[in-house]
Image 1 (tube, one colour):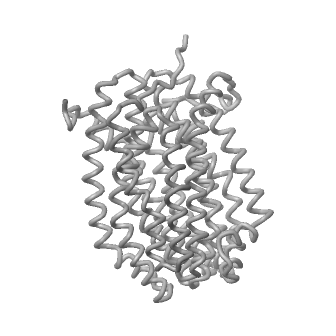
Image 2 (cartoon, rainbow, N blue to C red):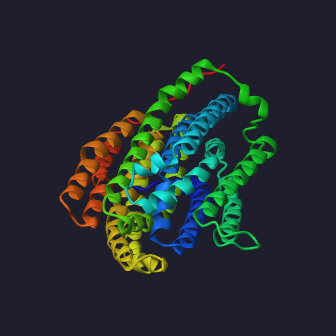
Image 3 (tube, rainbow, N blue to C red):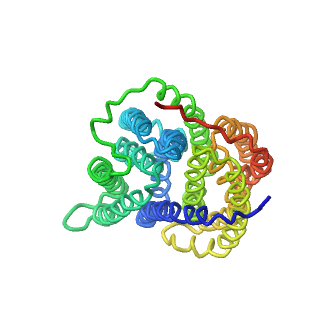
Length: 453
């Protein structure tokens, strides 16, 4: 039994698939980071308002992540069997569903912006800024949902570079428009957070345009065309619901967790909300490489199980555990070093917010070690291998029985903000023990495809 595989194709696929996904994540991070840096010059209320205004976007990201995850997991196994036709039908189902989700949340953002922001904070200045931001940024939701569904479709057939290209276009448009609209350049009035929201809407529209042109006009691997959007297949639709609902439900649980995180930290006031925004930006920076590699592991897992190579998959699983544990230790050390200088980039926030941000960064330098191990194991192996319901149940138990109760209790008792923040992140360490036991059982390898004529 080998602990580290000697199959060079594993490492080659891991890097080939992961690098574009990681670069896409990095570019998306730079878009968000540029937003934060430009908005932070407007003060704590503006930073906190944009952060709270993005809570609905966080929920949508989790929801579309579930839709795209279901598509990716099932389609990757069909790709392992080299059967593109079922994949086209799955993509059609996913895109139609994504459009519906985007439209629903757009209507919510337009109709109830103030009410939504008030869920997370009682600070009047933050509510005012968040309402302005949400009322405009919600127009981007449908474009975002369609883009993510099509990117997942491409990843399922091992085309990952297009996501990076899409994000690069978004970066250029978003930063340029942010500068012009937030600060009032080129003869336009200074719009503040409203300008940041409009810049996001336009960049999302550009993203959708680029991915649509590629998928429907350029791609030859999957060969998905406009007419395929009308494809119907009831058995595949049932499969999509059967395997997709636990993913969507799991991501909804996680998005509820994130929204409750904001509400709990919001009870401390604007300085802590600002600190949470800064810390989550730092966490995203660390998360990028892990997410890219975990996505690559997921694609390799689905393809390998779809091809029926069970023993080889066991070897890949052991290799994944060792590689990502090492990556976690490296990432944790790096965060400990760069945490304080990173917070120093936010020159527009108050001294109190900066101090809390540094304490949050120290917490992340520990919890990111657990994230680096449990995420590729539970998502890249267990969930992508077919045991989708296990991950959903595991997340649900940790969120509602450990994370939220402990954090709410800490906040109620008046604990320092960093203690409450640590409670909100403690599951990243505890899940490692579950992941260690589960992955060694190898009962997560399940065939999700149907036999076709």
